[in-house]
Length: 465
Image (cartoon, rainbow, N blue to C red; front, side, top):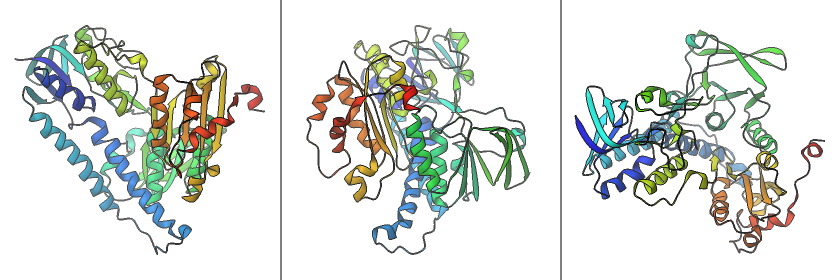
């Protein structure tokens, strides 16, 4: 039996921001991890995938050399080197974090999957840990869809795709949202034929139709075959490097044949592995742990941060969850969950940066909404870089004059969006933002000027005519 002040289950990114504070406060901490230190971001998400995306962009820009008057010759991709690079990045980050945490005074790492026995006790194999407080940071995993024939097919998820040793000849991606599209574009740029099957009427379903349409045009322009309204019916694998995906589209039976299959159809929380019932921890209908404004679960001694609580599904929101927990735990009830403004990025190239409401959400809010848009093709810096795909959309509350939401699909969109996020937290009028002076020549400098085009958001019926 080991006794601690805090038992921390899982090592997602909130771990690195909160555990050091616990140590500085003189607390003893048991860290429980059944997989690799660092969670999804370090091992299967942000770190390796963005490294691959960077390699794919290098290949893409090398091929575009003649567009800029640069002779590059034939471009080829050393896939083994690409994968070696991403493995060096993710393994180094995981091992570095493990060494850092294990070197902290008062911290013990227990390897193995944790199971709650009650609100103060966690078992890890034969080892039992007790603690005054339990923090669950156990994340999510790729959803295993119920498709006829799936048990007979070798298929990939976002983790298994990182273990490939040879570039797929034809990668079929089921799921046209964030994870699927990042991989689709990266592998296409490295030389794979790529087909994307999306069940819904547009890509990235949570985004506005015009943003999704621009993204589809970008991907198709690079040679990716995109099928919308595609309902996958059956899978088959007649031989080693042949996967048949049978789907219906517009009432017709169709088939696509690839060498590799990536299923990117959502995530499920790892709550089912924790024996939460024993501690009185409630989950919702999708299995996500329910939390209050301070990350406390239905069991007073148990908190849940990160993807497993269903409140963000991003590394930065997981980190913020940890900070909200810390403020409450340390007695400084400053931050709460409801204060957080949604912000994130889709790391296609060009990327999509988003903060606040989409147009769909703004319409549903019942507010009087002003909107301004501009094509990236009409922004000088984008034209100078010959990176003119995409658009900017800014939404403003007509009465309060506050920003409601911004979407930037275009070069630098993932970085530029961060101009708006802190401004939205101040709840200042967009007219103040309009007065700022920004560096020329940049894409960002046009953001205040776009506000000159604000106009009432037209009726949705009229907009669709």
